[in-house]
Length: 166
Figure 1 (cartoon, rainbow, N blue to C red):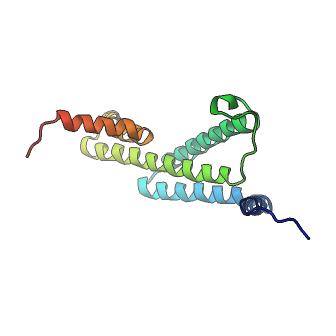
Figure 2 (figure 1 turned 90 degrees about the vertical axis):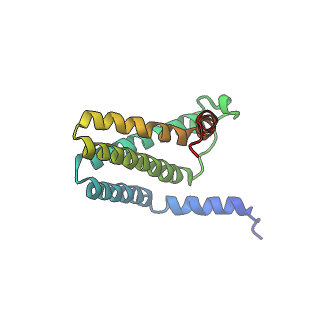
Figure 3 (figure 1 turned 135 degrees about the horizontal axis):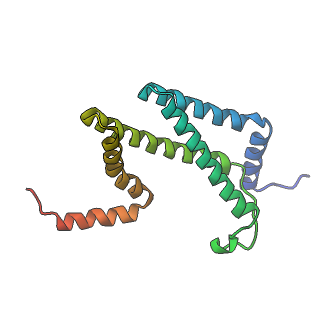
């Protein structure tokens, strides 16, 4: 009689087998997502350089994040800083989830910044001023998304200082 496998381990093994069986699947999915984002940005901004730069920068940042994960969890660099005793295995779903979250966030912020640049360009016609104003306007929102508690405190302090117009 075979020994029972715990349910969580069984699901983890099944996902691992699914991802390991066709090795082209994760790369095909990633390539498809990058190409789709490239085409959508190309249609939105009528440019080849902007979507190419966005795709390349997103892939570089995702590769850097993968590198950090491997250095910490597989090679054991700095594991004591996060409370681990040594190197640990990376679950099979982690790289795909990292890709989805990081690529989605970076594309979202790319579109957010480019839209601000374009709005200022249409108003002023000055590219340098458009980039400066677009970065100044969107900078606080982008930083606030990474530090929600900082953003909430700053907003609350503004409400206390700003007089009511009502």
